[in-house]
Length: 203
Image (cartoon, rainbow, N blue to C red; front, top):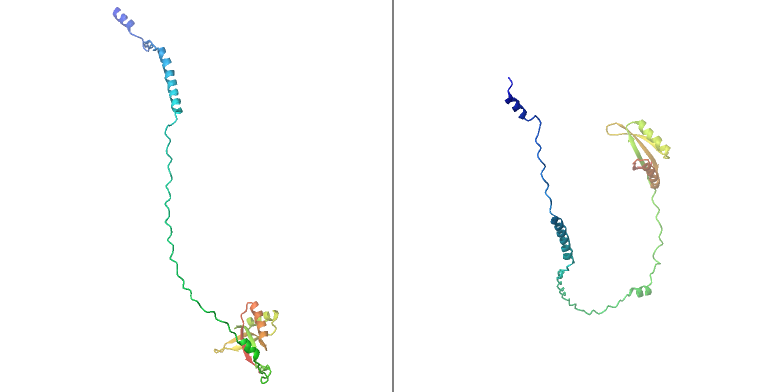
């Protein structure tokens, strides 16, 4: 049925999404005297700071004095040693042997002239042993090396020890003077061989 009350109620309901507009708040107007007061205060503050910087200090700071050096005590003088002077009479140098030598004469008539006594005939030879080997081939190899080095007097000699085992010795000599033996010994040392020297009697 047609109901006029419902139709009136529908017309009075607000639509979805609709908002009421509120009027914007009115802006407060700043008074004109505030614009004049702020710059005056800033200028007065700056002026006061400049006046404080120009005021000179009336009192000067007292400088700090460095500490005074403590004077060192004067060293006490060491006691002087009393030296006793002993008077010694100078000795007279008397050298009498010069006069004695001038006055004396040596008699040499009973002294025979010196004559060198000849040495006795040397009854031995000098020998050098370069090395000893159990093997004859090793001994022959060393002997050949020594001959090529200029030691032509090198030879191999066979000897027996107490256990009846053979030794083959490489020997050099005989030398009738020690100087010849020394020259051969120096040659062996230059070849890195340390020889053994001995003497044999002459036959």
